[in-house]
Image 1 (cartoon, rainbow, N blue to C red):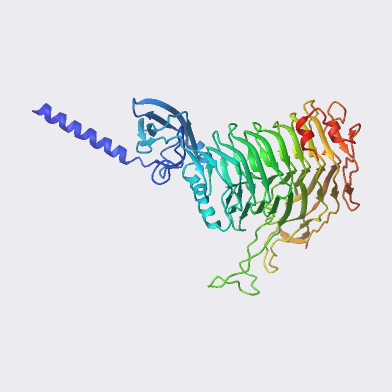
Image 2 (image 1 turned 90 degrees about the vertical axis):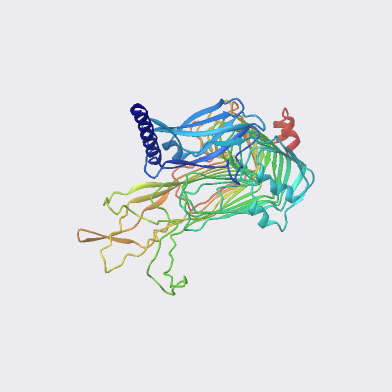
Length: 605
């Protein structure tokens, strides 16, 4: 009897200790996309979800987080992977592929705590969907796509979204993973007004998504971020898609016309990428026609590096482009003023004449900035390109930078730190570091004749205080403009038949406005100074702004047609100007030059 009682006591103690141990572990994972009403992450052959670790007591330290998926039918382990707390801080997305259609699985996520394996979620039952095909006849049919992002869709007639803006806003397609066949029909008057990071007809294309045989007519995207917006917000924006990161994506036989991107961006994220087709891209793109009737109207407030492309802003190395005709207008204004807000009354209204509670917004905060613009791609680094005719017009309408903050409040250092404001602008590429470009023609215009201004508009220092204003940064403008590329260092034989076909480049005037000198006080000595800025480098050329070691020889087949109407203004701070290279070809008949290329023959005007 005593032995039995002792056994019961031991068992109860074990259960109690286990229960206490379990209750003292508070970490858990929050999943998005797999349960409740949000099952957008469940497809017919894959699941996709976001994981957020909630760990108030920091019990999950460097231990692995284990993700296991088993098939219910035979309890077979289909997937096993590990991640960590550190990884989840930067990448919350998980994708499990290779599943079976309409099959039940169980997902578990565990970690080890005090030498015990504990669940971070309750085991979750998931059933993959049917591999569905659906014909789209109406606007309502199209708006339902967001409820099944994995299906196969076929457009059966033109769709006109005029007057349906609110319904569009409520049913944006976030991350499409299926197949969309436009049937050679058109989507018209599709208007998007949103603050989402990825915007387009399809916000994002993933997995093995395919979009083909579609005309987009009169689509507009409007994104405006307030001056109070989070400085780290990313943006990927294009007319067809915002972004894609899968090399399996295919986009074919697309026409875009009468469409526009109207963007006001205020973000210092390193991921600001815009293009008339897409913001950033992987996969293959073939038989694309972006007509000259399309426009990108872009106003930049605060920013760091920005990629702006006539077709795509910043493609991945795995992307491939062929048989592309693209044009339209890129209109850029940079309006990085140091703005101030007046004090508000108890009703939220501005107090007239108020000089209190002034908030500085919008200006530089001590970092470098880059603006990279290409009539085809903003940047090309090992992306394969062939058969391209580009006529994008690039218009830099306004450039004005100012300073928002000017120093480290905890340190004093009278030595100025150099910061750069860099522009790379080219008819095909802003930056070009590639050996896979062949058969490309640029025939648009580049206008950078605006005044480049820099003003010092820091909040005034109260004369009755000893507030220290520290001058720490020296800002230099660096401008690279070329008919084919703003800057390149490649000279490999894989670069063939790149031609500039007429058009003009205008680079004109620079204005230096140092603003009102500021005062700072150091150990009782009053010193008056001003923030330095100047044009450090101007590199300009009919073909390349700066060309590294490229030799314009028959081997590389660079060429121009005449006449060119380039104008390099007199009012310039020119340190380096490359006006023309040596031995490049002057081409009198483009069709004769491309006589062995059937596609170029058919598409050259």
